Length: 120
Length: 110
Image (cartoon, rainbow over all chains, first blue to last red; front, side):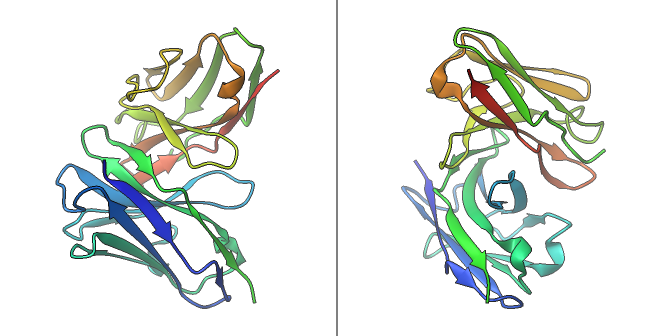
């Protein structure tokens, strides 16, 4: 079972860049039947899809965030990453990475989430 | 429209049947399969329905779903206390060219 797990800085200052990494265990990130995504949840609020990427680097981004996003895949280390530039307090959230099964067309395996707070 | 609308709350007593609705549009629910996620307090979301009405392994058959045009519904039959959670619908959206997620419904078991 390919299991994703997030890691992040915990605290980021306003206007700086947030960098998150998702490490996939239990198999290869290049498995053709999966994509990999990021979803976030501000405190007390609902889920917001951020972006999804295939191991080849082909990505899909939330238009409302796209100008501030960069996603990449590190296949030797079985990781994928997300960078969010010019963060504000509105980016404070729990960030989840998840596996999207291309046969189910659904995020079927989620990491436990990592809390990121934007504050000076 | 590129938004999925859910009622903010729902409730039921143990043993009851509860329905949670999800309203979308021609670019999402009408064109793509709908998934439902359950989020227990303090935990990551869990997939409970995919492909409109398919359950992943391990999800009780008390959970079912249906679609009609631009709307979808999650049905929980024989409600149990452990079903108390937030539920989210989700679907691909052609206008967004991305994943849409509903605002979520907080289910309370009275």
